Every structure is written in structure tokens, then in C-alpha cells.
Amino acid sequence: MARKMLIDGEVEKANKENTHYDFDLFVIGAGSGGVRASRFSAQYGAKVGICELPFHPISSETIGGVGGTCVIRGCVPKKILVYGAAFGAEIEDAKNYGWELNERTDFNWKKLLHKKTEEIVRLNGIYKRLLSNAGVKLFEGEGRVIGPNQVELIQLDGTKISYSAKHILIATGSRAHRPAIPGQELAITSDEALSLEELPKRAVILGGGYISVEFASIWRGMGVTVDLFFRKELPLRGFDDEMRTVVAKNLEGRGINLHPNTTLTELTKTEDGIKVRTDHGQEITADVVLFATGRAPNTKRLNLESVGVELDNRTGAVKVDEYSRTNIPSIWAIGDVTNRMNLTPVALMEGTCFAKTVFGGQPTAADYNHIPCAVFCIPPLSVVGLSEEQALENSNCDISVFTSTFNPMKNTISGRQEKTMMKLVVDAESDKVLGASMCGPDAPEIMQGIAVALKCGATKAQFDSTIGIHPSAAEEFVTMRSATRQIPARKPKANI
Image (cartoon, rainbow, N blue to C red; front, side):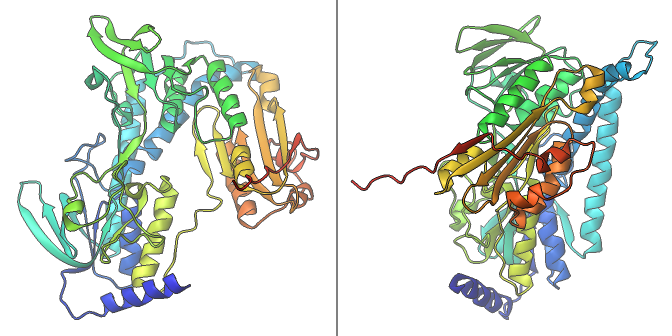
């Protein structure tokens, strides 16, 4: 409460200053978070300017586009490709449902690529109109901070213009990371993977996170031979271990070659493609090598350290407090550039909270509890709340784990051998549901509703008393009556 009152007083004092500024707020970065913060701040009456690099599907230090990573080279185009990749298996499954496919079915990559590009261009225009309709002044060019209340804009022709602002918001997101492997220039990142002119026949992917398993599913669904290399025993570190095992089995079931506990050591160009060498001495030749080894906060060209803004020494992320404020009172940061929880809806939440705090007179800290997320592999994984491992780590009470693994009704006719798994993690003492996970068709659509229940503090008894929709996969979440296992609380460490 004291911190909230302090923030409220400081912001009110800053906003009442008589000093003349060009803008009440200047935002660097027009991705999801920056656009949301700009629009909502303008709705509170602020004079807002925002800058973004020129549009291009593949980003660099000099090109980007209004809409940012999610809209142009992230969530949206990726989901379009996931839809496209899923149809191949759907067509095969349809045969057992009576659909006679008398002609050869071919996949036209260039057609899908064109449709994808059309959509992101359309969305780029929509985001520009949203800013314009809100009264936000959009500048095209590269922005950097040159003082606590001063931003420099480098325009397309190289001309530099300086603007003053009461508040500066950094919302520049993150960029794909490239590991320092000999021949790394031969590999691509997710940016290029979403815009390849030709669909490869053979693909190697390095990484075990969201992006790696999603692109493995996309390319395999389009008929590409895929080899996926990752350093751990299972992909998707940080997710529930039991669900990670299911995802790995499903990836293999779809024909993806998994190489756990393995990394790449060298890439070389040959007449037949790109030769990949691993730390186990394996050699594989591919048409495309994708590095999906994480992303780094996009702070290198912002001049923040010269102004005194504190950055994380390891990641380069902008350090902020619970209200997204840096150590410089007039400079704030939201979204992936802060490396807190790097999800588009979270950046939107942080942008909303920023506007309320700075211009709405309502100091509001973002709430990171019970944030659902999804990995759009095929079939997808979706979770909300704590994994079993996190629950054991964070709870002092016994844990009850409920699971259900089954063959979806659709598969009983199609003949596809692929299980769906659902899981609830429950505090045995309070009966409160701490976490939910699902791997299977429509998991993200189902998990969104489960997230509401967990946000409201639902108990296992309330799940049990809820009538299921029959026949559906979702009803399994309210019919898991018997615990799969009971896990006693971890005893606190003895004081030595």
C-alpha cells in the first residue's frame, strides 16, 4: 500500500509539472504492449507519440513494423501455419469417416505463404488505424533514449529529430538468439522460417522450447523430414514433466525424429545442403537449419545505459518494479524487453496497467497469477497455474494429482493412435485446484475456461459438482474422481 501511494504521488507530481514537453508520453516500439499502452494513455487524455521501424516480415535492427513480433512474425503467422499443417493429418483421418479421396492431394506452400503475408499486412494496417483513431502520433524510424525526458528518432533518410516527453515507455520486445556455433550464419531463426520462399524437404531444428516443437509440428505436417535436437531429456523445460513426456511421444508419433541430450557443434555448406555435426559425432544433411534457442530483450541500440537505466547483466533486460518503472522515474518498460513473463497477453496487461498507473490515477501492478498459455505443437499443450513440480516446490501441504489419459472419440473411427492427457494438481488440505494441464486437440480453447475457474479460486469439489458436456473431451476435467497419486508435503530444511 505504501509503495502504491508513493507511485501515485510521484506520478501525479510529474504530470502536474509546468515544464513544456512535446509529448506526455513517447513510446519506443509499436508491438502489442506499446500499442495498448499508447491507446489507453491517449484515452486518458495524454498526448502520445510512438515510433516503430518500417514494416517487413523478417525483422532486423532497421526493420520491424507496427504490430510487432506477435502480429508480424510470431503468434499470428505461426498459428496460420499450424492450421495449414494440421489439414494433412485431418485429410488422412477423413478417409475412415467415409470421405473418398480419389485424386492425389498436394500441398502448395507458396499459396499458404501468400495468404499468411496478406493477413499480416492487413493486421499491420489495422494496428496503424487503431493508433490513428486513438489520436496517437506514429513516427516511422528508430528510437533511442538520449535523456530522462528526451527521445531521438532516426528517420528513414538518416535524419535525426529529438522529442521531449514527460514519460518514456520502452516496448521494443525481443529478438531471436543465435548460439555461437561455427557456421551459425547458415542457420535461420523463426523470422525467416515464417517466410521461406521454398518449403524444405529436410529440416534440422535446434532447441527444446515453444518455437522448436511448434515448427517441428508445422514442417512435419507439411511432409518435411524433421530432426529435433535439444539439450535436456525432454522438450519444453519448465512445463509439467508428465505433460512434456506426452508431447515428446506425440511428436515422435507424428514422425518427428527426436534427439534428446544433444546439441549442434558445427554447420558446413555442402553441394547437397547444410551438413550438421552434433556433440555425439552424428552428421545429418538438411536443406534448412532452424535455431530456436530462445530470445533476447531488444535493448542494444536504445542507449539506455548511457542515460542510467539499469539493465540485467545476464540478459540485457530492462529492470523494472511492479509498476513497470525503471530506476529513472520518467522511464518505464513493458513486455518482452523486461523479460518477466514473455507472452503477448501479458504485454497487453502490462500496457493497460501502465496507462492506469501513469495517466489514469489508478496505480495498478500487473497480476501474474493463473496466466494460461499454450504450445501450438500438433496436438497442442495448454496449461494454467502450477505444474506438479512447482506445486511441490511452493506448497507446504500434501498434493493430490488427478490424471486422465484416453483415446479421443474422433480417433476411435479415424484409427489415429494418439492419446489425450489431462491433469489437475490439487492442494489436499484446502481442496483448491493449483494447476491444470492438457495435451490434446482443442487444449487451448478448453484451458481458457479452466483459467477462469482457477482465477476464481475453484476447488476440486466444485469441479466434481460441475456437469460435463457429453460427449466431449472437456468433460474429463469434471469427471476425474479418484486421485492418481497423493504426494506428501516436502519437509522444511532443518536449520543448521
